[in-house]
Image (cartoon, rainbow, N blue to C red; front, side, top):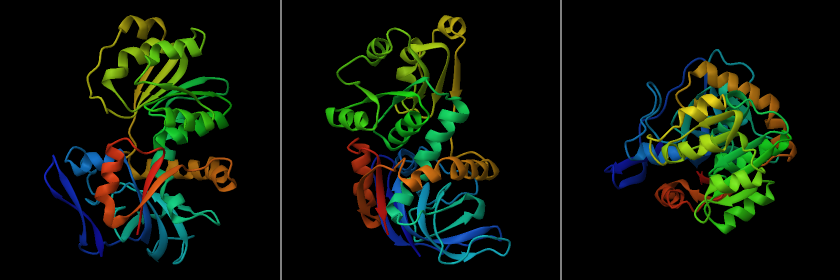
Length: 324
């Protein structure tokens, strides 16, 4: 089968569509013919040697996919060849075929394209678990979402609004501000404004209840500063690096919680449980059109290099999808 292989070096990785060994599958897995996958920041990091896959996972890039079931393992029930599915992966999405634990499959809604399906698992699961599990989001609360125009950000805005809460986002351009406002968020351009000042003004000095942050160290002090009493800071990335300054007086005085959260390294059983809850609570709303995956651009899989450069330049609003 063919897959994207990473050539070159860490500074300038080159993504090449080439032949690799066929993938195998176990009795509790299904083999899926991949029709679409999507680009995530983790893929960019892995291509540069900075984010190795978990033990036992495919070395091929790709944390999500949509496709058609080709074969099913001997212990699998409820799935058969020809079923249209999408799934979260630990790796392997940038390939013609991938093996997936049956419990991690979601059925594609009728009328959905494979591109839509591939745009869901990684970013929507990330937003879902970090808002509701880690952040304990409740109606009428206020959430600050950094990188609000990203795949995770656009999913998070919709989930926050749907939950009856308020979303405030930081973005880096007027176009991204306008788009996030259309989704129902208050938008701040972090390149032109100090987000901490603007957040306090937008909340009449009260601050926010939850922060969803992929930026990391550089934002730590200001994040803690804008959290209100009993606030929760959920860190999901380190785009600015791992080191930051923390005012312990604010942490204790406001009884704050700081949570570190990743998705890829969680054990399969936990991912299967997340898939089940997402399928029951969010997927019906996506299928009905109440929520929607945001797709910026679609590239052929052979142009994965260009797709990575597009995301690296922060040009996208929502997801960048690769079609096979």
